[in-house]
Image 1 (cartoon, rainbow, N blue to C red):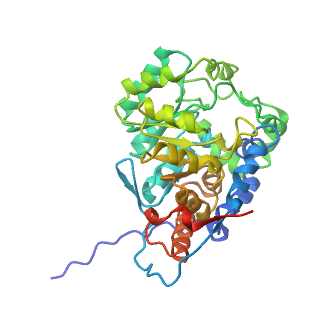
Image 2 (image 1 turned 180 degrees about the horizontal axis):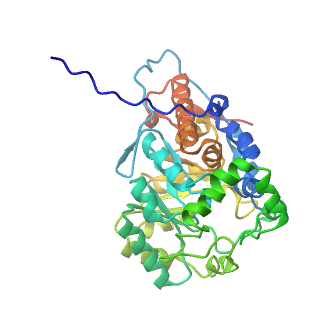
Image 3 (image 1 turned 30 degrees about the vertical axis):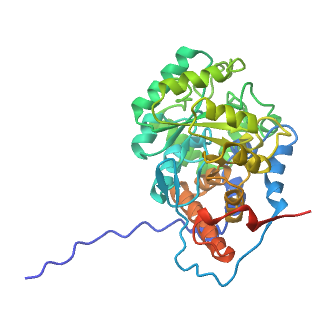
Length: 398
């Protein structure tokens, strides 16, 4: 007597909109249609005149590839080793604040998609879902902390992250004061988020977002709070205390990093470095690596694109992990950074847009699009492994 094989439920069919998403760029235009203007403006916005935002993209145009042909690349792999882990691709998801306003339970959607794709995601310190819930849903997620203003709160926040089970702590250090994000104001976004007729109209004219994200969140979880700025729950997004919670950072210095290194037993990364001198100081203070970043152009307008200083930092620190973010959109961008010496790349806004378009399925699709671009371009470069990339494969234009 034979037993019929157990029926395996078919995987849910991806949303049809994803058939039109052929690159990370496509998600931005679709997210603009789906999100209320203030929410999209917050994600897309940068500081002042957008000079750093624009330079992050134009920096990639400074380099062209030289290729090798008739190389057997039939056994190539996009996998890389980083900080003792094997990842399926040389890129991960950068931290993005308030992503739970882009899609329902956005931080969990991002983290789960990354985990399924075997790449890391970094949970933002300005997220709206408790870090304990995110790490429980997606073990292996990294946590990004904006340091509170006093040593006691720093200690408590670090203890909370360790107790929750995070193994990698990312300290973002490029926000001594709040940036001049006047572009957010022009699109109707403010901190705190102030109810207004304009905000109400934006919600009404985007009923899918209003019902599927905002009202669903209110009904099931209440008014969103900044959950992970401190060891205790932060202010709700509509509270006038929000600005106070994010102030008092202009006195922070390298002694605070030393304090955290003594306390934190896991991997410690410093994000927001834009100079050789600071990369060396981070290494001296016990960090396990740095992420070169200008905060996606959202802090100091006119700050150099990280790609432009990448090679100098790599030369200065030697065999020590240097990662990079800001402006990455294509597999070719990722490969240029790896050829200049980066160990890993982080990508932010496009994955937030993907979440707004189709939730976790959208993020998964975006990750796979970028991974396929990396794989395809490796083949055309004549490269089998990311470790084979080197500066000789780049030609500086002009």
